[in-house]
Amino acid sequence: MQELVHYFLHFGFPFFIAFIFFRKEWKKAYLIMLATMLVDLDHLLSTPIFQANRCSIQFHPLHTVYAMAIYVIFLFLPKPFKIIGIGLLFHMFTDFVDCLFTYQKCGECIAGSPIFEQIKSISEWLGL
Image (tube, rainbow, N blue to C red; front, side):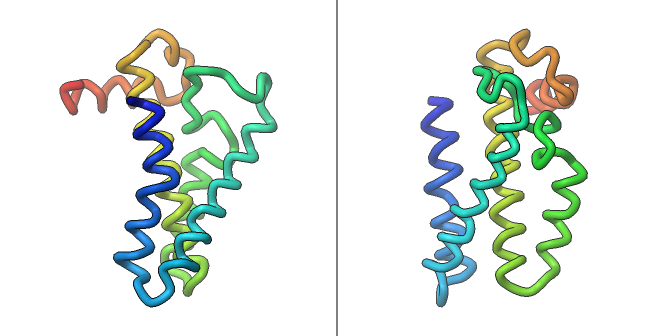
């Protein structure tokens, strides 16, 4: 279930965002949002590059609150920066949801995550 939700949010839901909010140029908006997946190239800076159950938020450089602040600024710029900002912020949301799933499956697996306490609190608040 976690993988299905994760990949739907990364690849399927941006289609709906593009179609609803950028109807006249939805194809271009969708492709731009898909291109924001390149933000995951920062995973190459990690050792190991891939680690099951790792929470990306606050771990990888382009997944930090500092980077997200820049992505928010993009929302106030003209297109295509606005679309890029939406894509990047939605990517962060998707990865955060993935962290919540991971916590539910194996809380101790992400105990060393920089945002473990936030994930734990939000999970409890949501009643998960």
